[in-house]
Length: 160
Length: 160
DNA sequence: GCTAGAATATAGCATATGCTATATCAAGCA
DNA sequence: TGCTTGATATAGCATATGCTATATTCTAGC
Ligand SMILES: [Mn+2]
Ligand SMILES: [Mn+2]
Ligand SMILES: [Mn+2]
Ligand SMILES: [Mn+2]
Image 1 (cartoon, rainbow over the protein chains, first blue to last red):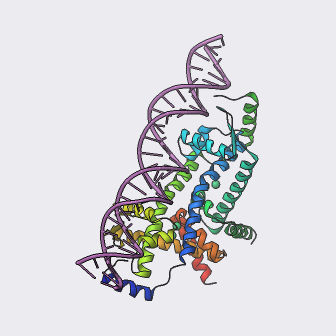
Image 2 (image 1 turned 30 degrees about the vertical axis):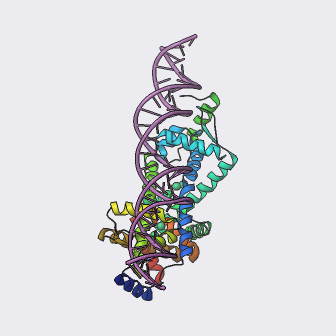
C-alpha cells in the first residue's frame, strides 16, 4: 500500500460518491481491441490502395503507393515484403505488385467498409472533405455490428 | 520505366476507363492525418483515464491505470514519464499521478469527445456494448466538424 | 522501530513503423 | 548494342510502444 492520511480521506470520500467507472475488464478489452485494430489498419489500407491502383491504372507501383500514402518508398518496400510473407500480395522483383485471392478478398471487404463509413458520414450531414479525411481513420475501428447500422442508415436516408 | 507490352496495354486500357481515384495529395493528407491521430490517441486515453480515476476514486495509481488499459505496469510508468515531460501530469515518486492544468484541460476535452461519440452511436441505433467498444478507437479520428454534426444529431434525437 | 508485502522504478529486450542514403536493376532509346 | 534514367532493393538508423525480470521504496501493522 502507501498513501497519506489526506489522500486516504480523499479516496474514501470519492469512493463513496463514485463508482461511475465501467468494469475494469470491459474497459481493458476496449483498449485491447483498439490496439489490435491499430495493428491491422496499415495492412487494410495497403491492400485497399493496391486494389484501387490496379483497378484504376492497371498496375500498382511502389512509387505511386508511397505518394498516395504520403510515405517514402523504402517504407512501402518493407511493408510489401511483410504483405508477401502474409500471403496477401505477390511481387516480381523490380516489377509491380499483385494481390493474391486472399489479398483481393481483404481489399474488397476493406473497400466496402470504407465506402459505407464515408457514405454514412455524408448521410448524417458531415461535409465531404471532413467525411473523406475522418473516414480514413474511423473505418478501422468500426465493428461489423456498427457497420450494419451505418449501412441501414444510408439506405434509409436514400429513400425518404 | 519498366514494364512489358501486355502490362503497358493493360495500363493504357485501364487509364482510359479509370480516373476514379482521388487526388494524390488529398489522399496522402488523409493518411498523414490518420497517422498523426494515432500518435496522439495514447496520450488522450491516458489523461482521460487518469481524470476519471481521480474523479471516481480520489487517486490515479499505476496499477489501476495498467489494469484498465490492459497493459503491464512498466508500460504505464514509461508513458507517465513522457506525459510528465510534456507537462500534462506531475508525479511524486512512489506516489500518485496528478494532472496539470493543461492535462486537466486535455482530459476534459477528450472526455467530452468520447461521450459525444458514444452517445451518437447509441442514438443512431448501435447496441450499447459495440458502441462502447468502437468508441474507444473511433473517437481519435473524429474531427471537430464531424463531432459538431454528431452532437447536433444526439440533441435532435433527444427531443422528437 | 522493524518488517512484509504492495507499488513503483529501472534494465534489457522485441516488434512495428518510419526515415535517409545508396546500390542495383530493367526498359526505352540513341 | 549499350547508356541513361527511373524504379526498386537494401543498409543503417530513429522513435514509439509493448513485454519480462528485477531492484527499490513506501506504508501498514506488529
Ligand atoms: Mn480505407
Ligand atoms: Mn484507412
Ligand atoms: Mn476516450
Ligand atoms: Mn480511446
